[in-house]
Structures are given as structure tokens and as C-alpha cells.
Length: 226
Ligand SMILES: O=C(O)COP(=O)(O)O
Ligand SMILES: [Mg+2]
Image (tube, rainbow, N blue to C red; front, side, top):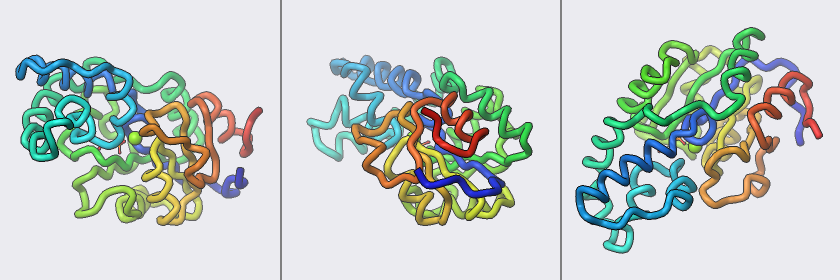
């Protein structure tokens, strides 16, 4: 693993699958939609895996064999159902809260760069009690482009007032690593997330960490822990 920057000003995080285990609510919304349509509900595991790719990827698990227009036609209803249940079962992954507290105590600013639509991100952060806590929040529709484009990462650095060269980008998907690297940040792939069926060791991240606890320890010591 590449050594960490000497001074860390900011840590930017992906949301779904990195800070929050949001898959149970995204699955619950799909269950409801399948129920409304009398369609069989797909098993949880393959849905969980694609959650970081957004609503369409989740819908494809149930309606994909009917073709892309059938998926597209259900996005609006799916998002409405998700908004209803969002936050009920979504929790930070184990170890995330103490890790964020560690950053806050150390005066390191942390921010969120998610591909989730802004109206959902803002409402979800309210519901889980994180409103106003992150130094910046950039959502999938804040700009005309989203991750893997580096622009949302650059904007989050600007809004949080941190130097990209002294900041980390942390995510559970290859597109997080691509966006973070192209924006000039040190990139961390997290193996505790959804991973989209991929292997985080193959994404050319500067570091790969297995648990939030290990990540927190690594930040404290500036190096990988065994
Ligand atoms: O909802 C999405 O599209 C994915 O969200 P994420 O970027 O926070 O993983
Ligand atoms: Mg993600």
C-alpha cells in the first residue's frame, strides 16, 4: 500500500455500502414493488451486491428479463417506495460511528460523495441523525455528471475546504476509486461494502481495508495493520 499523505485534511466517503448499510431498505422497497405487481421477489444476496449501482440495477434483479424499458418504467415508483421505507433498517456499518468520531476529534473534515439522488441523500441523512454533520455532501444529481467522473469529488473538496492532495477518497466500488484517483486523492477501497461482484484488490486503489475498525486503526498509525 502507498503511504498516506503526511497531513490528512479531509476524508471523503461514498455513502451506500461504505458508510451505510442501506441495502435492507432498498430491498424492502423492491419487495413491495414486486408485491404490487405479483412478481416473484428475487433473493437478497444478488440485490445487495448491486446496490451501489443504484435503483435501476436493483430493479433489474426483478424485472431485468423484461428488458430495459420495463426497468426504466418502474424507476419512479421504486424511488417513491424507497423514500417511504428509507432509514427504517439502514444503519452505519459496525465501527463507522467511532471512526467518524475519531476523525472529528482529530479535526479532520469528512464529506460524502454519493451517486444517490440529492432528495434521497438529504432526507436519509436527516432520518439517521447525520444532518449537518458532514463538511460537504455531493449527490448524484448535484452536477450533470456523477462518479466515476472526478467532478463531484473535486466539488466536495472545494466545499469542504480541503486540498485533494491531502485528502482520501473511500468507497466500495471501482467507480469510487476511479473518481477519487482522477481527482488527485489518495484512494481507499473498502472490502466491507457491496463491491458489485468485483474484487477491490483489482481496482488499483492505493489501499484496501477490510473493516471500519481496521480502517480507523490504519488512519491512526498511518500504515496497514496486519
Ligand atoms: O444510490 C446510488 O446510485 C449509489 O450510491 P453510492 O454512490 O452512495 O454507493
Ligand atoms: Mg457505494
